Image 1 (cartoon, helix red, strand yellow):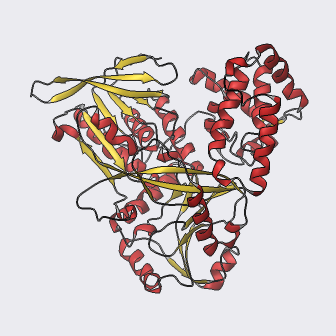
Image 2 (tube, rainbow, N blue to C red; image 1 turned 135 degrees about the vertical axis):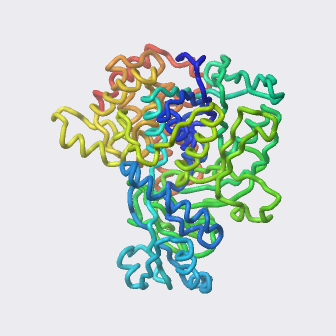
Image 3 (tube, rainbow, N blue to C red; image 1 turned 60 degrees about the vertical axis):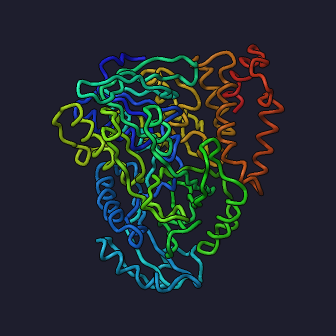
Length: 546
């Protein structure tokens, strides 16, 4: 690990907000370290629609948030166009929807300064033939789809290029406090545990920034501060292919199953709102999936018969307040909250939570402003003008980009390793070299995070074998590492498939079981039971056998 004794700001949480803060601070010349208890975007930042809000969704419930989304959306489209697909959005009402809400919608948009164009039913069906023929009204807005993983990776990589440090699989487990000259408490040391090795170490930052989303209250507890969070789970479905060209929103007050977002080669549909008591188990259940499919088919009939390759769930980082209405968690503000815990007698702790992916840059700016003030540094935010483009091979995470580059640049012998996402051997080699130089390790999971590996229809079934065989051939891994890598990748991928196992997806799961359990023994309880010599023999030949 790199030297951490001179760190000015410790950022706890490696989601889009945490990585955005790291970028903002690094561009100001402030040294920052990000720790994440899992991997980048393991929380809500990687478990959402991927919707870049125009603001139209909030015109009825929160006009300020609507205007905020509109401004930030335009900024992100300018600084990070490679992370965004400017799909446009449609709000569509069908028979039975509240016609008074439909009638009010364009006026609400106008008051909030949100672009809204009225379309006839004939026009909207020409734009999106897959919509229900029961459509009664439609409006066009400036929604877009954004790849939150690409966004966070670019944030973190650009921050690292400007001096920031990033540690994954590291969790803050304790604060050592001391009294300042003014009598207030200050965090002197942060005790951190490496979740992979169990080893602990200390970090001595000048400022601690809590950017852990739904976990924010757990971090403030380490400083003896209570922050009440609402754990509102939302489940989403990923379709095998792309069903629409526009973001489709059901034109009604926010409810379950009313947004369909085309995300690169797939569509993402959801979501639900279910209160959780804790964060121990965040996963979709079968009842949610059935309900979502039934709701979605009312607006886009194809959602009833399409193949779903996975489902996932995230927890919205909502802050509890006595001023908030009770009942449906959708009524809780989607704005963000920035807490200066000086008011709680802890001088150098800041918490940022709430908000949305669309507003992450603004959240980072306000947090970095406060951190800079605590560090007594007068530096200006430049993230709204600085292009969000790192030198990392991040183009490999863009769907469809690998095959375009391959067709233009490759030699005839450059074979495809991932056929679903069309990623050739040369691009994996480039990424592995970069990872070993900049992240010290290169395994299947790190390749998944930094590319499209395992994100296509086969969910890692075939590409995991090919890439692992290639890594053995190139001596990047040895012994039982390959099977351990595959076991971990497929286990993580299967978590998202369990609740959509019917039809062709169930058939694929049975094929996986036959291949990986019968042939490779990946269902064995003890990985140490694998014969390393047999592993070397089988895995080294995988690439040659195709």
